[in-house]
Length: 318
Length: 123
Image 1 (spheres, rainbow over the protein chains, first blue to last red):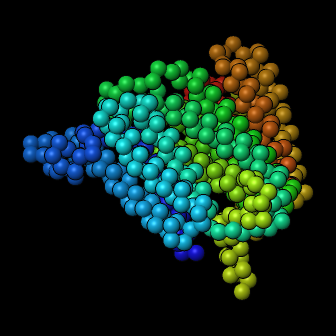
Image 2: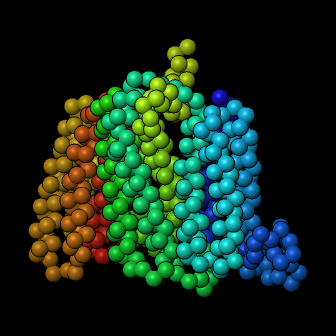
Image 3: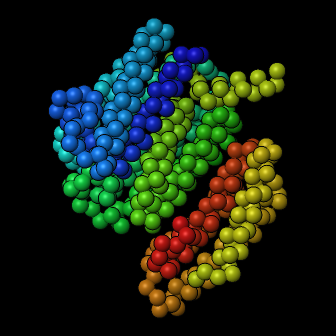
């Protein structure tokens, strides 16, 4: 049970690094460390440069960018631990996900490095973000594997009725995030100064991004209705409500940031929301996923949210 | 565009929001009182949609009509959608859906107002 926390920590880390990476961009600290993998020409860590103008805020940029690299390093360490745990006490299915997660985090380091070396070219920065959202999914699949097999008839019913709307929800959320990533690549927060931007009609593209979000909202409502009518476990149903609430929040912060000229605090919240929405939609899809083979039906593994809730309720009753 | 009608719509939805918070806090599912409250809200939104469309047709101002009507009609969907889900989901989570719905309406009205005045609005 404790070891599942390591995998939960990996999920949280995958979401948080989206925010620290976002802060790098929003504070224009993308080139705070002007090179990669070293921070400066001759050091891996920031060093005070004699004669550097400390009043220009350059020092702050260095530490923000270096902070993001440190977070990545910590996340990498957690992912190594995940690989070890998956090999020592995980089911066979968990191992490949653990390795995939580690490879993804290392790959993210490289893509981040390329984005620095390529002077923050928008499409590389966009790929850096999109890969992070993919890693959120990977970390959730891995965590799901590590929770071990749990099965019940109600859960099978939940899968039968809700798998498709949950798939649609995840698909719509992914499309929305992808469109939002292109949108921000055309926006003012480039991560540096004098950085190329994508040439898009921002006004029209924002409407498309919003429409995709509405589609995600409609899908999650269908998922919630299907789960409720199938008498799915309350934890899964609550997850649908949480996803719905987060999506409504995202639509609100999106409208707010659009109409107030993209203040960085609001954009950071929108980014965190995007990461958490992806995580919730992915978890919803994972726990309602239909088993691949009939033989696997007997070995359905459950979801941690439900298990956690059940532990808590039984605790209060006792 | 804004006037007493918007004030009443926002006021009622915020009031419903407060009431729903009590329901969520006390772990109660939606009952006939909440359904009635959201029904009244829906009726007011219908009136707003009618008045809004008439004003859009008669105004001399330069308003983005498509977005404006989009917000007017979109707001009509909120109370029924929230009610349907909360009646299927007879639990605290179902009431939470109503809370989200009640808080969404003021956001939509604010955006509606922003589109009408072509300004930043409250939100």
